[in-house]
Length: 457
Image (cartoon, rainbow, N blue to C red; front, side, top):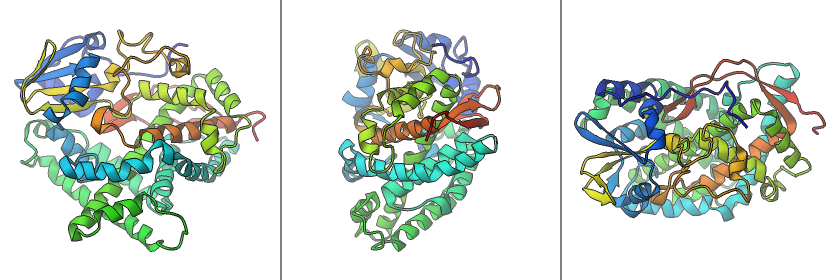
């Protein structure tokens, strides 16, 4: 199946960028940092203001950086600057013993064996969201599926991890996140060259945003604490985090706030975008939609049946996996070498910037057959195995996304429920360009039409 012509991708430059070109691409769209040749090379070496810059596509080199020698590579100052306003010192940015302690608390609550109750909550949220889409479809009103999926994923994250209904906070949260993506999440020259200990001009705006953002998170925590003893349910992720942070006074309260912020951001933004890109792909592939609908037909996708139904949604899961390949939520992973290290013939000098870009890796011409084509068959049972370290939608190694299995299961369940009920079509034919701004976002929210699927209950 060919990639639909309406699905645009940024043009890759033909030759290495000048330092001004690097600045412009980092600010406007980092997906354009790498040359067209990089999509067929094991490694692309460039420099930025005299500092080596290496893009890795070779599986052994990727394993070296993310797993074998992970301790010799750290997050870069720009990535910390861009993420810290949203997550503080939560799991995403913490280091050392604090990170290990956070991981020990969070990982079991999102592990595969913990999925059934989480999926039951997700199914409840999906059922609550569908009537609004039904109303829009009945009136032939164009639907903003990006906003709908963001709201749905936020509600699922709130209910499943923190037992909090997010309707009260959702609009404010989305407005703040959208404004921040537009205003403070694009690096400038000073963000790229100054060490993290020296504030850049934009850091002052980031601190102001962080103050308001964390104030909102504190209100969400207060709403959750007000429900204690009223739900009758067992301990959720919030209870475990609160216990882990207890006894540290104001520092513990700040750490709890940062962990909640991290899990809300990580638990809904990437899933919402995965669902949006899946819908965009499906709108141009009606035969794929029909196959998903047939697979989901007759399955109980409600709270009681969702966990068991997930085992039978192999094609729907393959569609989600292919959407994650074409539009990985984190388009680039950046590390800085803190000591010189070698991997075969590759030398990583101290201070070198090392890029592992799922955007490039997932479209690499040596690693994938027809890499620009939308083909869910790549991920079906019995298909040829995906080359190791060629597919990294959730990262790899010690820092692999702790909620990867939950996110994949959630997206599969939402997509099956949506497609079983509706036929998805585009409301316009203008291209939608992916842009990397913290996550891989569309440059605009196109309108969709949802028509009741014939024969759907």
